[in-house]
Length: 229
Image (tube, rainbow, N blue to C red; front, side, top):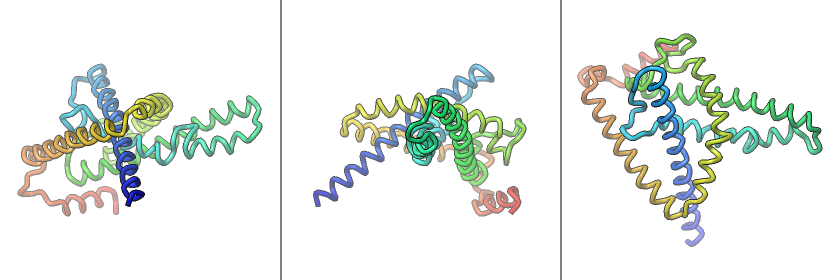
């Protein structure tokens, strides 16, 4: 019984830890987009939440961390160690490090684009919620993903996983189990209420989703036709 309780506690702490990390990334993603629009275009409320979070960034960060790690840790770190060898020269170390950054950039670009596409297919095409659109840009697919922005996200994620992510991990490790759990529960409750409120408001007020005409199956069928299946 004691071992089971301990395992459950560790699992709960694990979930709380990565939810808080995802939330930190989501906040910086929201901040980055908000400032970008203020400087380059015009002020705009970014994300679908009232709270200052864009959890698409957090989801991408977690996907990158669990599948790739950073350029020199995790799965990519294992690849780097194999490429470098046991007794490498300085030239070999530099060459392997440069190659790892290139490979990591390519991998995170593909992974972030895939996550963006999946989220876009669900919310934009499936549910008709216009969270974002690349309609006015070239090199797009279904107006959900854009090559130019995918390359930008790849560069920013590579930089962020080498800098901000390490800072977030360091700060999170300073939290006590109790503080971690309470913080995660409170924040998750606020985010969930915010999400439910915004979804309810959208479905009630948005003319595009007039309930008299809205049919999820029809939208899914139209989506497959648009993709070409």
